[in-house]
Image (cartoon, rainbow, N blue to C red; front, side, top):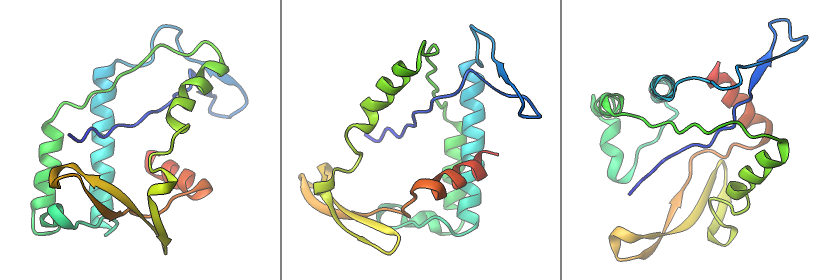
Amino acid sequence: MEHPHIHCVVSGGGLSDDKSKWISGKKNFFIHVKVLSKRFRSIFLKKLKAANKNGELQFSGKIVKLSVGCEFQKLIDSLDKKEWVVHSKRPFKKPETVLEYLSRYTYKAAIANHRIIKVENDHVYFRYKDYVDGDKQKMIRTGYILTGKRCMDLWQERML
């Protein structure tokens, strides 16, 4: 049932090397989605392996076995064999269209406020319904809270 995905808005160009002017990309082409899919998979898995090596990942519950021996590498190998799908849309014609698109995903938070139980240290504890276990209400803890500048710094570090 899991369907992890990311929404990104990519500019239609970039700054020149000396950052003095904007250079627009080709009007009808960004990059072929098959190439983009493979590149995204490669970068994502590389960063995931590095995070694991640096002790930044925690495995508990049903996935605790990933912390033992070569189980994590088996997962990486299986993910590397799968086809990752990138869906790329035509460019937005004006900034208002970008805002309208993004608002559909930011209007309602991924974790509604009423589900948050507590925030403690660098973790958020929240309530969820476990459909596999008879719709029982349970509590789960997120990873680290990343907000504002720190989130942007981490994103930039990992993408460069």
